[in-house]
Amino acid sequence: QPKALRRNKFFDEGGITAVGVCAPFPDKFDPLKLGNTDAKMERNTAAEIKHGRIAMIATIGYVVPELFHFPGCEKFTNGLGALNTIPMEGWVSLFAFVSFHEIAVQPRENGMGAYDFGFGAEFLENCDDTEIKRRQTAERNNGRLAMMAIFGMLVQDQIFGMSPFKLMRETGLWGPNIDFIIKDIPMC
Image 1 (tube, rainbow, N blue to C red):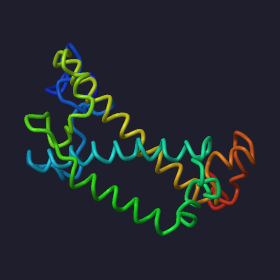
Image 2 (image 1 turned 30 degrees about the vertical axis):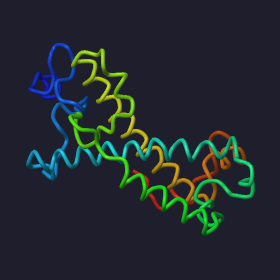
Image 3 (image 1 turned 180 degrees about the horizontal axis):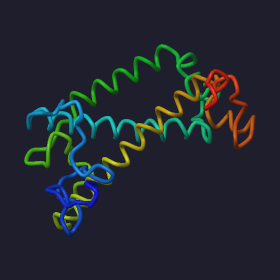
C-alpha cells in the first residue's frame, strides 16, 4: 500500500487529528526540521497563520482597487505601481496602524494558541472538536493559497509592469506572448 494512503497518527476515521495536516502530505511538512521542538513548531505555526491572514487581506487589497477607489484615491495606480503613488502621509499612517495593531492586539487568555485573538471565536462555541480542527485546517489551507496567490500576482506585476487584471484587460484572457521567457529553455 502506498505510504500516502497508510493511516498514521495525524489522521483518523473521522478526518484530521492534527490541525494543518492534509493531503498529499501524511505527516507535518517540515523537511528542514526547523520545528524540531514543540516550542519552535508552535512559533512556526503562529507565524504561518499570521502570514496566511496577512496574505488573505493582501489578496483582497490587490483585487479591490481594480473595481473600486475611495474618493480622493482615484489617481493612485494599482498593483506595485501604488508603491510610487502613495504620499508620505499614507506611508506614515500605514506604519502607525500596523505598529498599533502589533502592540494592542494580543492573544486572548485561555485561547487556542498564540494565534487566537478571539475574533470569530463565537462561531466555534457550539462546535465539536472535529469541526474545530476542520475549520482551523481550512483557515491554514486558505492562508497557504492566499500566500501563493499574492506572490503570483506580485511576480506577474513585476514581470509585465502592470497588475494582472489590467494585463488581462489589455491582452485578453490568455495574456501576452511569453516567448521572451521561454526562448532559452532547450527543447527536450
